[in-house]
Length: 214
Image 1 (cartoon, rainbow, N blue to C red):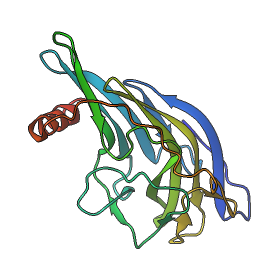
Image 2 (cartoon, rainbow, N blue to C red; image 1 turned 180 degrees about the vertical axis):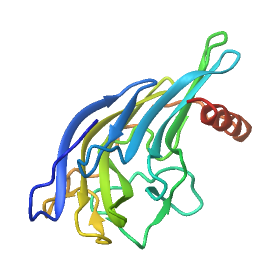
Image 3 (spheres, helix red, strand yellow; image 1 turned 180 degrees about the horizontal axis):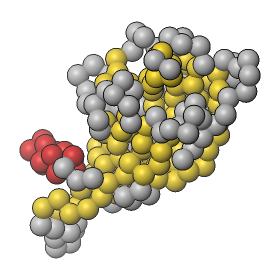
Image 4 (spheres, helix red, strand yellow; image 1 turned 30 degrees about the vertical axis):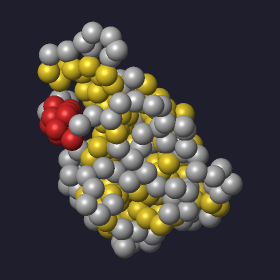
């Protein structure tokens, strides 16, 4: 459990981290340090059908009213850049499992087919926008992660998280104790690996297969 006790009088509470999320691992995120997880970051990977392996990295709200920021018409968690606003004007989903990135690897005869897809694919230092409840009041926060796709397998590194202690007050992605970090890092993107693009029918089947595995 990643926990943090907020100092008195603070508005934005920030905690650094260096937590790897490997295959089939779960990291519990306790934004306000009250001893209860607000979100789980879960990596799933395994056999989908026959020789096809599939998996994903998911954000799972642990309370009914907790939610993850998404873009319009998307089921994926948004990969925010530093400086993006997180607040009441944003779109959130309280779905029990919100994908960040998905992947597959087909172990047939060489050359093997594999790939990853989703807004977090090979992105460095991007931010989850988060909404959660404290004593029945809405608070906003963020978590910074770097995602890596390797032959269809997705892993991530959680390097920090923060939340706004004032109820209903928006927060800026990357802002900690009034300071916006990562302002001069540019896009912070890895160069994506060249992989064959799966067909839409394959993506739909993989999404159903991955969603069915916990």
